[in-house]
Length: 587
Image 1 (cartoon, rainbow, N blue to C red):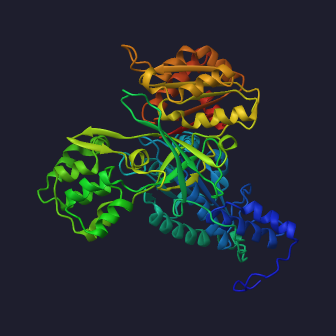
Image 2: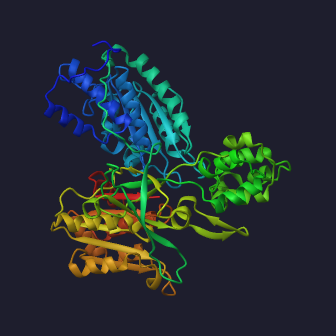
Image 3: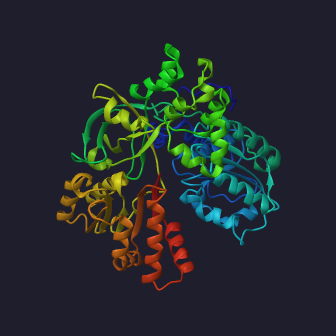
């Protein structure tokens, strides 16, 4: 077929076959459609062998490994695989958790896309490979070429640390860098695109004809709109309801949105991306501090730029602009070890007021990084709520440095949008946080605060499935009287037997603070028995303190009640993680 030929007016397949094809690709994004295009091209010309076959272990293919907590790494890896297929290269994108490290010795070229999570930690699906390459059992990889794309957030101290680790470990194993380490901030698209081009050039050079299948990509069948972060769906706000009581120190909202007519689908465990503007109460003080009141600047501050969280790009640019040099001196005195805490204790407005400087409106895009969507764990099961999606949103609002501080997305959702205002959304799949396929399996859920959101979806789905699996929930917050999120629902599920066990911890209702990890320890014997019977264990919520504390207690439980050594307990937990029975959605 000539690549420039127009598509056939009449498809050379039966109508029912065409209908099945259209159904199969409905909802796929551009990268996924390109991947399928290359896959089918390979089937058409390769004697039944697909171009991008994820089960292939051919050394002459480009293997793209990704470790991702929010989905960005997965999207980049899939886009790279699709582009490789369109160039006629055999390529496969594989989650690191699904990859056998023994294959590394047989690989010729591996591209790695990996994010950094929490305080410099690997995402859960990269833990095993990260540990192997950084340990004494690291294999010799002198025949391997590689390149790493590191995803990170410069508002954290250990920016892109996991990607730097992989790059260093692979080089120490004797592998050759085919392209330099590329480090991305939250606005990763440009850097990722340049890295992708370099990787593909090197793959074509290193793998040569062995990896090539000179076939044109098939044209994709149009399947209607596909909503993503660049083209979100305008959802109608159905409900915005506070679910913390009067007198609570927090404001948590239950948000319900309509997806009617969107074609969007999701599963329990997925997240909803919200493409929000900066509300006027955030824009106004920032524009005043900058001395920018023109319409173009206000539009940029409202809908294009990150003007709440402090990050390195902003600090470095502002330090260069600040005439007295005080900010540069303070950052130098703070040092790299204290920079993360310094940034987290401030918002942009604090820096602008403490270190005033003049800013040319044309430099806005160089000083501030782009505004990015916020992800919220979905708090509903589609089989129960149908064409709706529910969220549990903690409205961020506090006083510091003699100024009000706000969360951009949370305050806009809580206070800024009404039923007349559409909410721009898309679904972010989270395949590493899923209910067991067998509804007869037991599950244990640990979700303090708004970490409860996905477990509301889990329990809805489990009740609808009517399996025999038991459901055990651990929930914690500050005060029983004001902060027991979805209390009436949980108590109803408990009465109905849908919740077999419900353990709660309210930290401020007594002199000594009690958290979910304390309740876990109290129920250690029963919890270990459930794990031994095949239960799945889930954690959702704070990655900095809660999740590590829960893991420490879980290791103690396994060690004590399983009569194991500390090392054996670590191996036991690693086995649960590898089997998909220990899953975390932490942030």
